[in-house]
Image: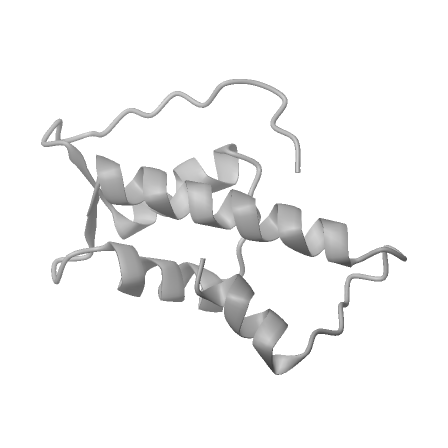
Length: 96
């Protein structure tokens, strides 16, 4: 997954955190297209109880997404959008 340019992150409240809706916008600008379910899982994992994401967690989320997209791309050798993995391979991927 390639990014055609830099992403400028502007957090409206300047408190070092972003809301889950701000996260969706920034992630989309970073060339990751997430469906609602994946966005909600990401918010649940990386946000606090108020659904705000601090910068460190945001960077961790982007790094994980990029890593998983790249691994999937490598495993999808025929470009079909599907891969077949054994349980232990899958566990190794998700435990990154």
